[in-house]
Image 1 (spheres, helix red, strand yellow):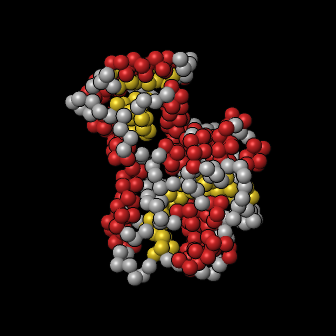
Image 2: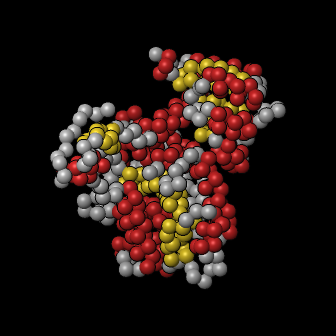
Image 3: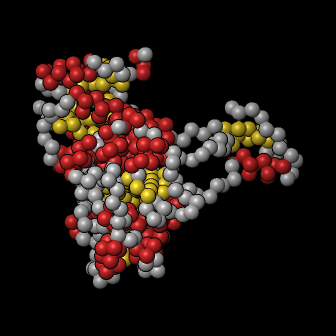
Amino acid sequence: MASDKIRVLIVDDIPETRENVRKLLAFESDIEVVGVAGTGHDAIQSARDYQPDIVLMDINMPGLDGISAVEAITQEVQTVQVIMMSVQSETDYVRRSMLAGARDFLIKPFTSDELVSTIRRVNRMSQQRAAAMPQTQMVQVVGPSGKRMTVPLAPAQSMPEGSVIVVFGPKGGVGTSTVAVNLAVALQKPEVKVALIDASLQFGNVDVMLNLHANRSIADISQTINDLDADLLSTVIAPHTSGVKVLLAPTRPELADLVQPDHLQRIVDAMRQLYDYIVIDTASTLNDLTLTALDLADRVVLVTVAEVPAIKNTRVFFQVTEALGYSAGKVVMVINQADSRNPITPKMIEDNLKHKVVLTIPMDSDTVAHSIRRGLPFVSEQRNRPISNAINQLAEKLVADLRPPPEPAAQEVAAEDAGRKRGTRFFSRQ
């Protein structure tokens, strides 16, 4: 049905490019090109008229450029998702696009597969975010005064999906992998299932930190992604002595290209059904794969240090997350390698970034180095060290945030209050 198709608006000042993109999409049964535009101003009007799901926007156009047009479109048509197109691949172009409201970035020339998979992924992410918005049903009860009251209906109880925790550092060398590995081990309990994904695909170090020598990795899953199920995962995931199950990065940097953002999403979706917590260690770059992980996250542990370059990058990261529409509580900022002798204090960082420092992890180079050399996480081998206590505190906070103790349903509270006085009668849902 036409209503099920992904509605696309193509914006580019070169007619040949618009036509080529339209032809590439004409073969896709689930995608419909609803309009084209050659200027930024025309793009804004077309977005109003056509209400597309996706806008493919060229970044460089005469007059109103693509970034300015994106800002206007995302403000006026809040349901639209923008994919920026450019021959420029510099980080600054990507950052400015994301800050303007773009959800992804395509480098020209791109293949048909790259174009189509990006459109589908961005549209799917949009649908998932919309589905995640709470929709509360109401129920009528008779209150203490004898009058009918409408209160929220508690959702039906079902098996909860696993929570995704992404550990990201805006600068290399801040200890992202160290935090991710030890956090996963700290979360692991006899009654809790934890998985760790090394999504730093080119130069991941999780295998070294856990002394694992598995000969299969996430790249092997990507090659058979259409057969993905629990059995396939079990043949690739490496068990660690702590109980954590680990999906390692490829053994060679060139194999990283086999893993597409869509693959990561499908892997994480499958692992949510099998594990209580999925911790994802990421590279310190905002590429498509990292952005996919961040979108999938229930919590992002932002690891930074009290150094000017890291603080500057942290500020930029917060600008990107705000542009992406992440909720204020999604990002948990942690100061790693904290040293009381450092003149830059956590309070100064909070004041500068206007974001709360949730936790500080003390500097302990000897413990970290010893842990990495032996391939033994310090939270289990040196559990009484202050650095281990800090990681355990982080794990406890995340568990409290993601799996809070159940509270009495609103209608149960009302029913108990009313029942003590005169009894309660339930009516049908409204």
